[in-house]
Image (cartoon, rainbow, N blue to C red):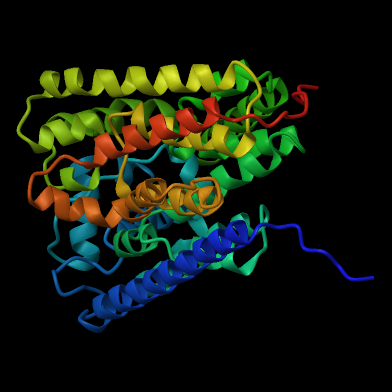
Length: 401
């Protein structure tokens, strides 16, 4: 019997055009990353890059943390002057660094201390990239999707900075993958985000509104267990010392730091980039925070499309906070890949591409003192809410058991 194809030619043509565009963007993203990474490494004089920084830049904090964990001298990390003295003794004169992470991170990074700096940095980068792409594959294994995920421009920024954005993205992706199917697993994974709690500050509210109580409980157990293990292994006073010595330094960075403002897509930091004082910058941040809260509450008071809802949660988590970096935005590479088929209009796809390229593009905006990053994130959040408002698909009942 002859098979009759009922798909309208215009629908098939539109789908084909969208796939062709995605493929072209994937190729362009891959070429950019290859040229970016190769150009950076070829001009380096290991262990330093051509700018005089250590290759991997911020990875030096991770490596020094691992070394301190192995030696048992955690106090070297928390005392700013002592920390800089050890950095200079190890690497020679260098720009100031400070340890900023909650000490639970030490539970995961200590093996890196067995390796020389460059080898540890390479392992960190390769393992992080594998974790990120592997987590995305747990959601969808189609080659177009995974290729698109693997060439997001934020990867270049993350590699350049030697940061943990790969691992942050992997954890956030896996929370989405399992929070309905295996809520205990999702909660245990979410608890590991204790090392960057400011990026998941909205998760308890979203989970409570959607009735995912098992995820909340498991996340609490996970976070408390990690905190307890950290104190057991590294000393009972490690958390009190962290809050006494490290948190004030981070507060001072928020108030007075200047060298990284172009890397932060928040209303607060964009205002500071333009010269606003501390309290004026907070006044600028308030509307962004209120928008994020309103969008989150509206989205999660009832069960809606899962992908769009999670996109609202991730985006709102970056809009609500005054403190976030472009290297934390690796997760948006995955989000854009997930949303590519949802955004139909040409201007919608331009918005997706703007978010996809933002971790790199905002550096150029910042050089020209153009504060586009925070408004773009807010616009993206509003568009997600708009798509949810028009969503007509009947979804299954919430799995709250």
